Length: 263
Length: 248
Image (cartoon, rainbow over all chains, first blue to last red):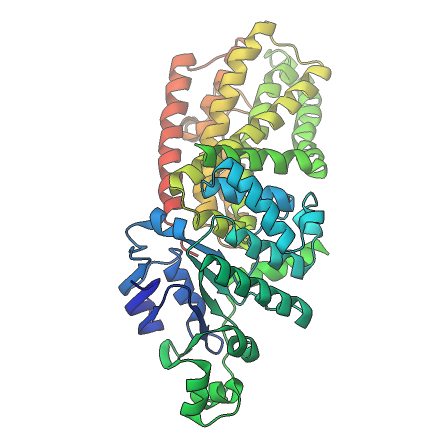
């Protein structure tokens, strides 16, 4: 049984088809990268996989469960690090872990023990009692990933986890993700815009454009298929070089407003 | 249950930790209490209605609870914005528990705010008829808080931006306050206002508060209690439904 199985998944918003009948499978313990230009449908797909959006049509199975029906059982099985932060900035790092552990019903003793392990692994243990609002971008990301691992998920979704991080932090972050993938056999489903990361970390890659999967295979296969030397070239060969613009949503506007307000 | 508790606790922590916000949110009720309470006092007295300060204090305490509880619901806008809402929505917890934790947390904070204003009113000279009447009054404060925290959650589930927030403030919350009996007595009102005040949920809350604190009651405790419970149930149902439908 695969960790993730998607069949003819479709999502439309009015006239716009964000995700157009895609199908793929991710095996257990695999690191699977989902690559595509802005607006290609990556985040929409992740949102459908993680019960935040209802698909228009198609079938999803996470660890054999349909997340549109067995919502809470499916949610228990995955962890997710969102594209934008989802921490409670007014609470400390430790409190964020605690809240997560309680929501995911991690038994108290295990929660305390795993929180310590993970905060140490992600080098946040010394700052555990500081408010998250005092953290740098990199620290917040690390905390989110540590939190995602807390309830020992079978599948971890990472939606552009390294956006805006310096190379040191990115490097360290992938090292941790790889080590947990190996030690706990966690399936990882990630999206990123950094092709070198996908090349280095992912076992298999799917390239999505205009809501459809245009290529799928190991990084090596994709390069051979397009006669490219690097994954970036392969990516450009497959998706073209026009620039895609995403329209700003009310969320983006509010975010700008909020940032203005905080200064 | 533990999910409800941890989300309730979060609302409380956030409140206690933001001292500036506590002070800021007390400013407006204090102005109403002191400026209107003492400013309109002489006119009210001449009209043969007794002390306006005594009359308006329960109304201002109710107003504080109204504002605070609706705000806590709409504060979901910030959680939506800064992403924390997503963390709770993908958690393996039925949405209804998340909604209840947030709503009861917001209501608790609102009651604390109401109590603070109540204490200030006492310091400024407010005297309930009996000190024991504090306990029924507290009960009605809780009821008002639940009713409007549920309304806040309902609004918070549909509002996506600051404009929507302003819309709700100006066309829902302020009218609920001004068109209730918080600031004026219910007798001898124009016909239209009679009808409007009677469909305003806050009227029943204020009426019960006045009944408990200064023995001045229009509809009777049973009518007020039943009205608040019915409206509360309706708002909680609406809040739970709208919250369960949030997609991000």
